[in-house]
Length: 236
Image (cartoon, one colour):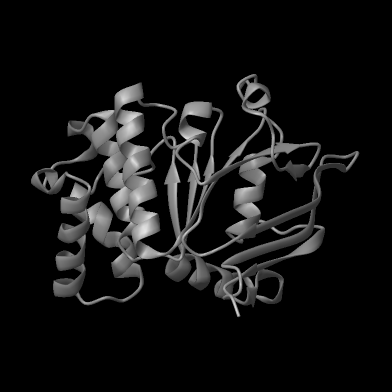
């Protein structure tokens, strides 16, 4: 019998505004361990909203989200926060590294929040910095880094606690084509090697092609099997 999905989203509906127009309407999504998924769509289609709901940062009007057998809707805010710290890793377009911390301190932060002892978190952080090719930059501050180095720092921080699910929201939007390709290869390789799952939100077809499969968010639902010619027409 095959293992259950890592993530299951069922009949998810989210509404915003006075008119309560639906951004997401009956959305369905299944993600298995070891799978790297890209979601494309126009600005305002609800891509970031979907990530926020999966992360438990927002609540839907209807539907269910199950992560490794745990239904998010049954958790209070504190339990959701603990689940995020232990199970999720985040990579953002704007990096969101803390400017007053060194590269090493930024990467050890998730482990510190999980209560990992200092020697162990230092060792694991250096391991991930080495995997990301930036161990030599451990004592530098974000202001001293290039865009590609900042994003590598963000990826090391997202993966250092070995999350079961990585959520990446336009992670290559501020990078040139060469740096973007390196970042996507790194993200894909580490997710597959760890048997984790990843969801990439992007406007870039080139970035989406790094994933195992590509979906498009349109009309509040995810569309499967969309021709690349249609995806290439997406605009931010």
